[in-house]
Image (tube, rainbow, N blue to C red; front, side, top):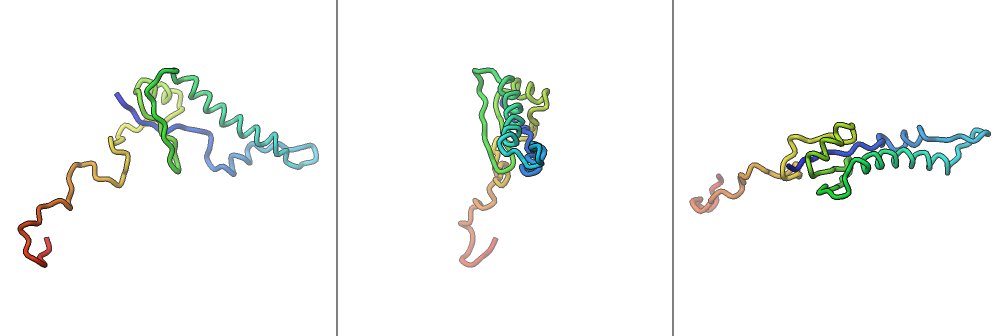
Length: 122
């Protein structure tokens, strides 16, 4: 069974997140290299935790969009990650991920207009 989810990474607002990782030198200035390394370590820990819970052989698919990273595939793997609070599962995810599409199968623009007189509006 295919399951869809969103990966949780410790990124809320990149500026705020970076601010939480600032490392100060003894003179009060920011140590840029150590601060970036600390931020990188935070992200790496989250990604490593996810990777360590995914088998090498899997049928997972990864996709990215503006505000999320999606992970789809084997329900057992996704549920394991959800149990560790690493992903949120989308139970109502449609087979067509485009929220603007009409997945109901009906097409209101495809009505047969052959019985319309010229200029008549249905």
